[in-house]
Image 1 (cartoon, one colour):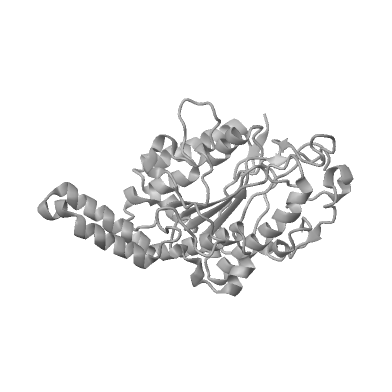
Image 2 (tube, helix red, strand yellow; image 1 turned 45 degrees about the vertical axis):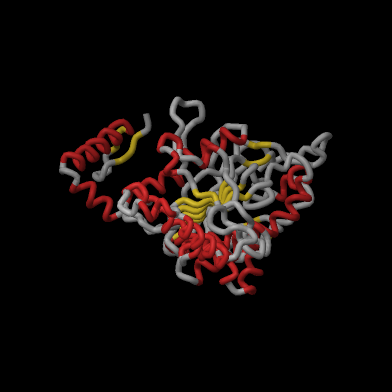
Length: 391
């Protein structure tokens, strides 16, 4: 058994160190909670919002934040020229030049793994922190945030506290045993279009004036409510209608109106779904929304891997780099966590043989789940590390 040292320099066993730690925790509990409150106050969290960038399908670590050019062509393929970053000693993939200039604003975590090879079950593990197959279905991180920061915790705003841009992630973005109340609000639509048609908020092809005209017509035809003005159930319906139209026509729903942003900034983010989702996420952070997920699909590159990387990585580079700089410029980066992650990595060795013809498979020994905290210097995200094979 290894030994640690106590304050007097005398060695103590690891078991004794654990025992003393447990006694200290028990003392805090016996102090009637005062000790715990003091400890909590001393370690108060700085982060107010999380932007989770979910790389659905599994991103390749060698082509992004963990390049290994010395491994050779069978591992790097044509993307074998990593570039220096703003931080001495850190190299990243050659298709991420803008993120290279923002390297002082993020941390790279290269030590995560979980060993699960299937997309759905690996995603469930990353999103919930629980192994799949247990009797209970556990809630994801966003649902837990919604529980503690949402309507049951005193929130009364119209914008939901847990939002997914733009497509649902499946059961692993769900609320589990917490129930449907804590499921995310999934926007649908495409923020890169002329009008971001957010499901239930913005109807494609219907102007705000037409929405208002429809509401007025509904009120003129609603003779039942006029005859039962004192009915409690109808009053509840009235309240629900007011809240719905407040989101559709009021100031709250304008958070999704990206036309309010300058064209130059929108171009910097990239006029594509991912880039404009990053812009929408920044606007939601400004409104105080605590948990936003960008579901960035299309990274399951068993085939045509390098063709897809040349298309997608420049989009990711623009969107993420601009998000970091924009948050920093507005004084929001020091209270925002950016969690960049997927369910696992991709094989270090390229599968040149048919039928893959230059693809990368699933690589579960590099898995990127982590929960880095924002601080006064930087937000952070996690990336993969190749823990076996060539380094």
